[in-house]
Length: 422
Image (tube, rainbow, N blue to C red; front, side, top):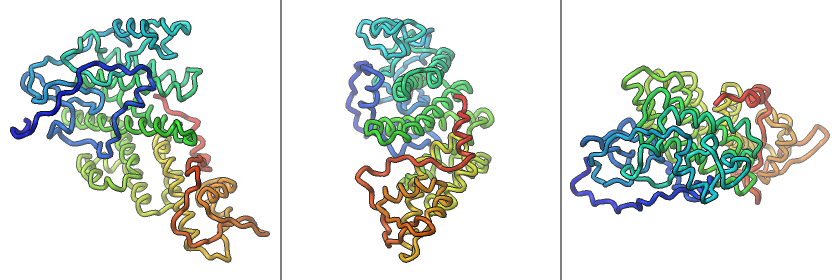
């Protein structure tokens, strides 16, 4: 119950503003919230969205996409919404978007930008929505949402479009799926599995986007993909918690908990929230192989133990774990170069051949990375080496550290060719 002295919130605009295209969901997205970690219970209105039902409140599982502009007192008598729409996109929205020629390339019938069909059109994400204005015929039930998700994820492997175009479309439409699930407060094993698949999509997208980070247009997309990944993982953690309260632990809970932990590798300012999150994790999950790996890697990263970070990642990471770890590998490599440059002997350069084995890179890539870091290399009769300059801080090149340097590992290469099913 809200405090009596709390000032009422300013009413929000109740207009349903649909994004004009899939890509517009990026430009108008909410700001990233660094403290978006799962909480063990709902203690205030700010921690999650609340659906009032018969003078009581129930948790709205998705903290981002189920936005409802209802009264702030949280005690109105609204019935629980159960969707009845049998299509991937409600008929009314489909007709309106045909009229406005607002169809993504995947939704166009025979390439016609003003014509679609129930088998092609997928409901778009609606930025602001009021539960009082939503009809059950506009909301898809869980079975339809699962079929819609199957259709979307199949586009990753079957489409002839570029990854950027496919990602843009799936990004927006999976947010719409989460929104429909949130409005219905859907909680089941089926829903948990759907969230797990959407999290996998964002993780794989994270790796693809990172590899094309030299493109300035990708930076914002990468940031927004990470934002939705964290929000989907937060909701999934809440669903796991609800499932534990009534059943046993989910089969994949340890794996997805390790994803959440690995995403905090670079979050030095979030030590306290992460410690609070640890308290909500059951002991069997904490002792699992996946979580033990993630905790060791987090410790190596924060201690600056670059050798163990790289070797442990190469030896134990799963494909999805490596997708998350990969952007941090270059950071750890640069830390290694900084340490060797500062602590080495100037008249005896550190051989790049040895350095390539330590950092698991090609020797030519090590030389390029040294150039990116403005570090000097020399060449003699025995080969090239890193010259010690007593430089403790790496100087960024004008283009920044955006070049991708793959890890030289047969195991990692094999993992990347054996893509997991979504």
